[in-house]
Length: 186
Image (cartoon, rainbow, N blue to C red; front, side, top):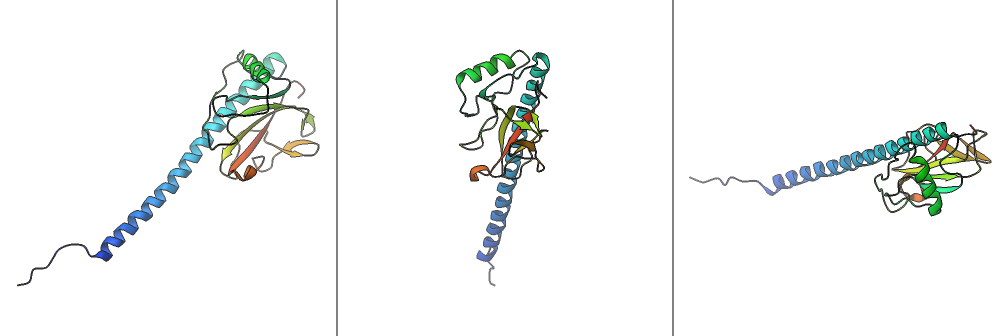
């Protein structure tokens, strides 16, 4: 009587390994998509809170929280602008009268992190509105998630028809969002 060896053949083992590799690849792709959506949601939520605080400040005082330059809202997120320390200090002091803005959002790479404000002589749909909030979202073609998304069309800013300002800014795989903030002159 012959004894039959019980075990797996090499072909069967290779099939199992290939199936496991395919499942692992699908899981990694799904995880990256979930992580990007979670980061985008956190950034949009922080931007929306900042937007509401600025609107509240304008309603209470009749002024913007800064009147020149740029200021980082999220100072703990690698936010960089060409701003002066005075603009950040002025913003922090003024906005504290109505509430505390979010100070950090997820860092999504080495460039274009954080939320910041820029004050400059600009218009939005023809009306003077010099304060603009800027932030980026990981991924291309991402919706900014807040009203008043702007695109620059000489000589000023106009409503965006895409829901974002620029796609894949500087080939960084990020979507740029410019939000026009109505103010005392609106």
